[in-house]
Image: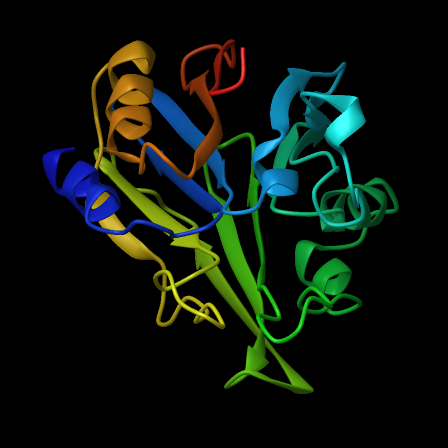
Length: 230
């Protein structure tokens, strides 16, 4: 956990991030958002019937909702979907139709926010704890081609989690994440884990954090939401 905390603490702007993994007793899902602009920072996570959504903290300051207001987490047919954009709904609809995570994401690409062309990152967790991660990114900063990467973890190892985030680091334009999802040791109860991640994210840029622990024994869930705007 200390290595994960230092990894996050040493990056002032990883953007939005998904972490999925396993402890001895639970499947772990975490999703955080960060922001540099007033519009991006003006958000909170709120609970919904099947997950969470982003919401403007101050509606009077909401400038452009197109890429910042969405449902990051939804659950259907025993699977939990977590993404950094409205592709959550695309995956949800495909799963409901009996199709796959990969099929859904082959209909989507990176965000239309040049020159950054922010990657779309996505994850899906199955009832047995197996999970997948994906990133859809531009080809070296060009919008001419979308590169689609998929990572499957069919037999998660207890004590190990993997994190993927939108940006490699801060910059102008902001460089996209590179390489496969990073592996880290994870552990502890949900409150310790939540506090560890939240305290490690850059104080100026962090906005909100969602953490869910799903019991391997009975499927019961514990959820924590932390918002900078309260």
